[in-house]
Image (cartoon, rainbow, N blue to C red; front, side, top):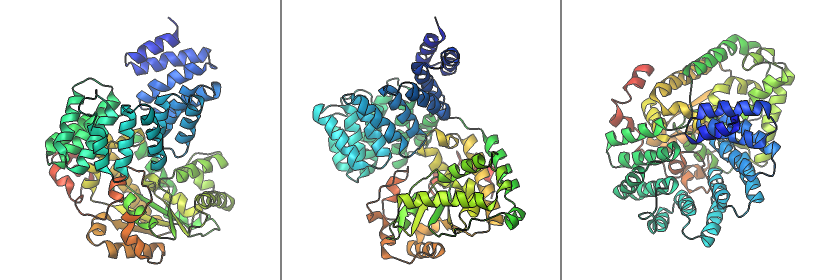
Amino acid sequence: MNHHSQGRKLFKKGRHQQAVQHFQRHLSSNPEDAKGHLDLAAPLYALGDLNGAEQAATEATRLGPQTAEAWATLATIQAARGQKGAPLRSILKATGLEPDNLGYRVRLGTVLIGQGHLGLAAKNFDLILKGDPTNLDAIAGKSAVLEREGESSQAYDLMKTVIFSAPPHAWLGTSWGVVCCRLGHYQEGISVIVTMLSTKMNKTATAMLLGELGALYAAQGEHEAAWAAYTEANLRRLGVWDPQHLEDYVDQVINVFTAEFFDTAPRAKNTSALPILIVGMPRSGTSLVEQILSAHPQVHGAGELSDMRAASLLAAQYLAGKYPQVCNDFEPSTVNRLGEWYLARRGESAPTARFVTDKMPQNFQFLGLAALMLPGVRIVHCVRDPLDTALSCFFQGFQAPLAWSNRLEWLGPYMVQYRRLMAHWEAVLPIPIYNIEYERLVADPEAEIRALLGHCEIPFDPAVLKHHESRRQVVTASYAQANRPIYRSSAGKSAAYAKHLAPIKQLLGD
C-alpha cells in the first residue's frame, strides 16, 4: 500500500497525525498531486492546524482549479479562520463548478450567514427547500437565519415539523436549542439534544450539541450540568495553544515599545481621526460598543478586521525583518506607507464615513504599531469583570484561532498576558486609551455613551441610544446581545461558577 492510500486509511480511523505523515511522504515525491494536497488538508484541519490546512487546500485549488471539492474545503477552512470575503469567494467557485451539489449550496448558506448576508442566505436555503422540503441542512440554516433576524417563533414552527422524528443532526439540533433558549422552552431543547447525543457522532458535531446543551442548562439555572456540558464540549473542539508562545511574544513587544522608543520613533504624517480601534478581551463588550458607535450617522462599523496584524506582516516584509523587532528600523517612509495603506482600505469600504471602527479584540497586541502609523487613531479599551469575561469565553465555544478560550489552563495565562500588555500600553503609549467598563455602561448607558463619544470627538446623536434599532448585522458571537437594548443580566454571572473559576481567580490575583 502506497503512502497516499495509507494516509486515507489512517484518516478514516481517526489517526490524524499519522495520516498527515503519510500524505506528506506521498507529496514529497508527488508535489503536483492536487488530490494529495486536498487529502492532507483534512487531517491538518482535524488537528487544529488551520494555517497548514489552508496552505494544503490552496495548493489543491492551484493544481486543480476545476475541482469543486477543493474550493469547498478551502472555504470551510477560511471560514474557520475567521477570514472576511475569502470564504465566500471560494464557496461560490465551488457552487459555480457544481451548481447541483446540495452540499456545496448548503455550505454557501453557512458562509453567507457567517459574513452577515442574512437575506441572501435565506434565499439560498429557500431555493434548496423548494426542491427538497425535508432537507434538514436547509431547515437548520433557514431557522438560524430567522433566529438572527429576531423571528425565533417562525424558526420554532419551521423546525418542529421535523425535529422530533429527525435523525441526529448537529446543526438542526443546535438551531433548535438556540431557538428554544430564546423562547424559554428549555426542556424541549434539552430533551432533543440529549436524544441526539445518545448516538455517536464526530467530535465537531458532539461539541456543537454539548455547547448548546450547556446554554440551555445555564438558562434554567442548572449550573453544575451547564458547566459539565460546556467542559465536555470544549474538550472536543479543534485547536491547540501554547501559553509560553504568547508570553514570549509579549516580552518582545514590551522590550521594543518602551517609553524611550516612543520618544524618538518616527510617526506618520497623516493624523486622520478616521480610525477607531476597539480592543479588549472577547466577550468584554466590544461588539456592543461598536454597535453603539455605528448607530451614529457619521460612523461606519467595519467589524473585526485583520488589517493591523496584516500591517505588522507588511512591516516585516518591507524591512526584511521580524515583527516586533523590525520596528526599531522604522523610517518615516515606512510608517507613512503603512498608515496610508490602512487608511486607504478604510476609505474603500466606507468612502463617506467620518469615522470607521475596527473591532478586532486581538488588536491589543498591535497598539504600539498603531500609534506610529495612525497618530490620530482613537483607542477604546473594553473592560469587564475578569471572571465574567473568563466564564463567557469558556462558554462561547470559539473556533480554533481562539482555542485558548477552551481550556482553563490556557484561558488564565492568556488573560494574564493580555492584562500585562494593556498595562504596558497604558504606561508608555503616546496616545490616550479610553477604558469603557461594561458594568458602568449597562448601569448608566447615556452617561457612558456620551463620555465615549467625547473621547472619540464624535458629536452626540440620539441614534446611539437606540443602537438596537439599527439594521446593521453583527456577525460575531455577540450578535444577539449587541442587537438588544442594553441590559444588566450578564453582569455577575460568574458567581454561580465561582468554584470552577477558582484557578483563574488565583492566577489573576486582585
